[in-house]
Amino acid sequence: MNFDPNFVGFFRTMQPEIITLVVVIALIFIAALFMNALFDSQKNCGEDVETPRIFFNVFMSIIAIFVLVCFGLSAFSSFSKNRMPRQDVDRTGIYQQMDSNLKK
Image 1 (spheres, one colour):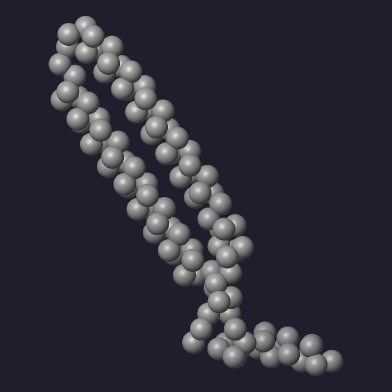
Image 2 (cartoon, rainbow, N blue to C red):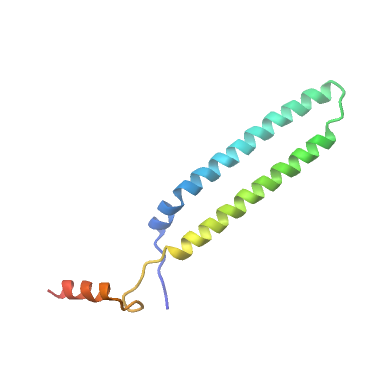
């Protein structure tokens, strides 16, 4: 059986997830810039900032990987459900009714 994917429907289905992904990545980037500036200002004061910087980098990396994995799972489930059914595969009544309407 060969199913053709419906890419327009797929991208319409994924639109909220794509917007969320872009916003989350932008927020992570902004937080990283802010924390980097904060760590640099504390470093100028003579404080040890390497340990908090490592924890922050690991934490942000884990969040980014989690967001990307969730987006990938959502895209996979959406893509696998969003297939155009074919008449020769699915012989339900609706396709028979469509055939009779087309033959009229």
